[in-house]
Amino acid sequence: MRILFTSLFSLIDPASGAAISVRTILRLLSEKGHDVSALSAGCFDNSQFDAAEDMLNWLGFKAPEPQGGWVFNDKTVTHVAYPQGTHKASQVNHEATRTMVGRLEDELDKRNPDVIITYGFTNYEQALRKVANARGIPLVSYLAHPGYKSPAAFEEVDLVFTDSKATHDLYMERMNLVSTVIGKFIVRPNAGKPRQRSRQITFVNPSYQKGVTLFYRIAEIMNQTLPTARFFVVESRMTLAEVEAKSGLPFSQLRNIRSIGLQTDMAEVFARTSILLMPSLWHESGGRAAIEALSLGIPIVSSNHGGLPEHLGAGATRIDVPEQLQTKPHLIPPPSVALPWVSSLSKLWTDDQHWEEKSQDALQKWEDHEPSGRVQLIETCLNAVIR
Image 1: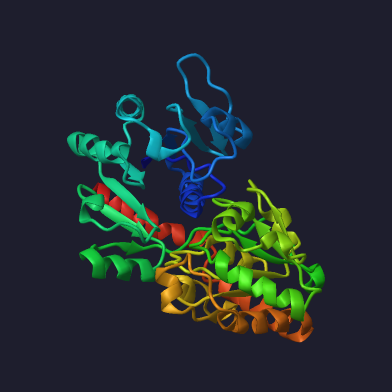
Image 2: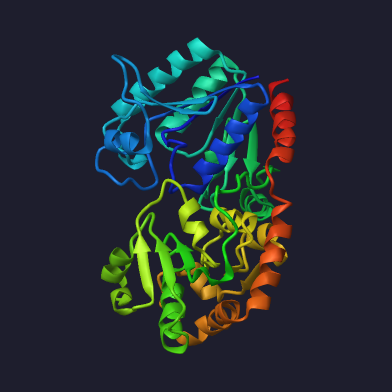
């Protein structure tokens, strides 16, 4: 089977859970003998650099030969990027879109794929649908985001994959969209199981949707009640300084927090993490970092809505979040909302036996997510849509 993924967005994006999942799927399909490649415009959810070329270079892409694109070889999957003057998909103009559609046409002539996989709903992805339809190539959309409001986002799409039943149900109710649940495709990070006393509670992506205001309340209380507990924040789409400037929450005054920038490899972070904190306020479709934590036996304290209940199960301590916070994540919650989180984190931090029990629960739940045994479902679906 010849498979092409294409979107303005690069799959070599450490800030995007969807990118990492699709990249994993492509690699697993390639390992099973399929001819797999990816074409993008080098756009990212969050770039470390103003120029797309600098971001590609930082991520390990090889600079292009004349008339060629930037190339990243992910084992046997080749990712080619043709930057269009910006690393932000929202800033790719109509002329650049036409240029990318031309690149796509060339790629289709060269590779003649049996099926195309994509995600996103920019002008490029909309043009892609027309091109695929005209050529009679089946189009598959990967859906792991709760934000699409119009059925137009999935017109002329032959098959929709989603990573959780929660997201399947959300779109079935919202627009009667039929999708196939394939689960989350995540490879265990190359990090050993942490010791209980690693002395680090990790929080990834301090954005409003991910619960940064609730995180502040949790850290504020624990700074007083359990000052030995240390929080480690991995910044991604937002930084704590940006949140402090916009919200007025004085993160810089809390001595139990330290942060680090966007990571291309989370192995070192997980190696020092004894608890993962995931206080997401929005519909978390997959929760990539939490599933990675499961694979390493890291106890998790998470929200209890979206795809997290089905993906984490008994592998996490799950806490209900007030609906008002879910609909308005910019709100700063009262301390009372943070108390159940503080209690759960404190017990994991101070009770060795409880930590070990939750660590074993996490490892047991990971068995449901191990990816290699589930790629057959994707092969079956792709073959069916091709036929």
